[in-house]
Image (cartoon, rainbow, N blue to C red):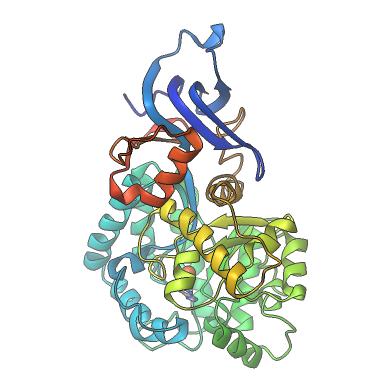
Length: 428
Ligand code: GUN
Ligand code: FE
């Protein structure tokens, strides 16, 4: 099949969320893609689509593509090691030294080849990505991501305080100038790869820099990503750095960086106060839930049920290398697991997430950041995975829902991604 073929029909077992609470699962159905957009799921193929090419995936599962809305590309190089420290020591001891290597394009080229190759093969169809503060390496990352066919946002990271001298933008003026230089290089350059404004987090960015980035985001109409209320020591530090603020979220909101005309993703929100939650609701801020990272860095457990009850925008993410791997199926099962621990150990008022709610976070929840994305229902961009679960053997007759649940828990034990489509283009 060629990459250009954007109108076709898939046949197989189908499951997807129509909303947080509505899940559609069919044993034998057709999903129709016309010009890269879904025409919906049908038990019988309507007459008008019978002329389209049919890709027979009988015996396999067809699901929406998964959206990883917070991942650090340069940290992929040290995934799965250095998991013994909490956030601030982890950044200083392992992360900043690793990110400094991206000053060199040879190292960056090799590392970003591995990252982009593996992301292409993964369950992720769309991602929101941190680069490093280096302009040439971030442009190189964008070139490589564009070539994969995945749809992504990528950020040149900004850092102008509390940095080691081997990893810094210098002062505020230099950081803003580097951001403008980067935007000149990349804006309008790509079909699938868009820039996103990326203050690392408040401890790394002066108020002046935040103000300048807010202005650039408004002038260029760009989305924003950062970190919020991930770790208790981080939150204390922000109180000291911004004594004028009454919550961490204000240190972004004051400068127009929490969302509004454009969208903002804040990773974590493990300890957001009622005031911070209200600010995020007011601005429609997206929360990137990163369950594996929150466990491995001992950061905490976000109250995702609470955020969903409040109708907030919540998506799911790997936060590599706080999380060790790129698997969004793993992120789905981890979201269920940490919600159960939170329910057991922290707050029995908040019921654990079901697998279908966690699947919603990975599909529709984060998908709306990109537009009409995250479902196979009519009108959504045709992002889809065809899953071969025949290697996860069982003598039992399983329902379609059970097959998807098993895939989320056990992809590594024999589940394969047979095909992947992004906006109707077939990546493999
Ligand atoms: N806060 C600031 N930078 C980082 C980072 O690289 N990873 C995580 N998990 N949190 C951060
Ligand atoms: Fe992160």
